[in-house]
Length: 176
Image 1 (tube, one colour):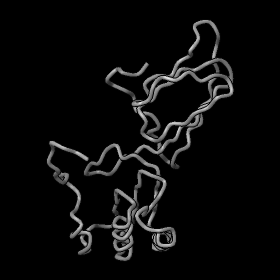
Image 2 (cartoon, helix red, strand yellow):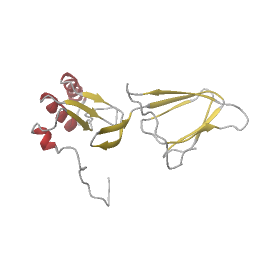
Image 3 (cartoon, helix red, strand yellow):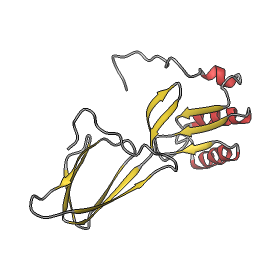
Image 4 (spheres, helix red, strand yellow):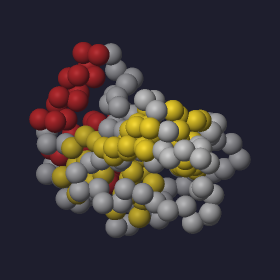
């Protein structure tokens, strides 16, 4: 819920009516993989558009029951729609959509690591412990938790092929 603001469409992009009238161009990005987003994507694909659907969760069309959801996702794939789950859109410009796709899986090989992601408390991870961070997470702290013992972390980044922008530096100076 948002209060105190008035929604306005961006100064670029197309209204849904333009897409449905076939004026959407050859490439289309749909933000949100619910029933309406997938239906719009399949319609545009049937008109010859190259369509990508970006969904912030791992579930497309969550408002449908399992049979309907599975069928709709299958039909979108058959129609040639590219479905990208678990992405956080960070910017929409006239040139395209930028999203963060990298999941981070971290494991402490030895020692202790302090880590904090925005909206979460700082946590100390010890050897043998692990954690993950979702795409677009704002990482505030990542450091050796000990002043005397070395630490060896292992981080594995799982990202969409071709996503070169794996990290965004915090220009506000909030990271430690």
